[in-house]
Length: 76
Image (cartoon, rainbow, N blue to C red; front, side, top):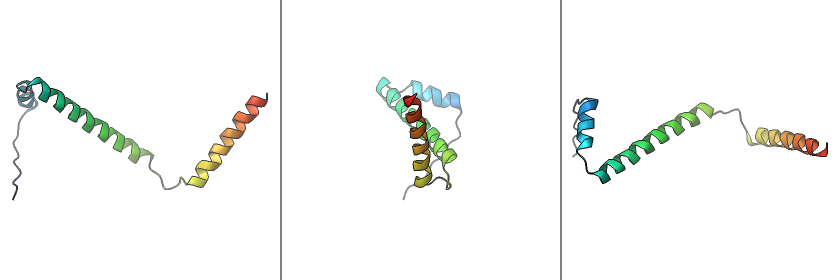
């Protein structure tokens, strides 16, 4: 059985703990935090652009319109 431990600490206390870590551990922590931030931002973007209105048919139609416009420009 696992028990979660919750401790109220300030940012400064966390920073002081991190400063005590060896360099390799600091680098690993930095990479983990960067990955977490990127994952969070990506999830937010995906949620923002998610829609039920966009079908493969709609995408293909739009692609054909753009292709046609590009072809017409090349002919000029």
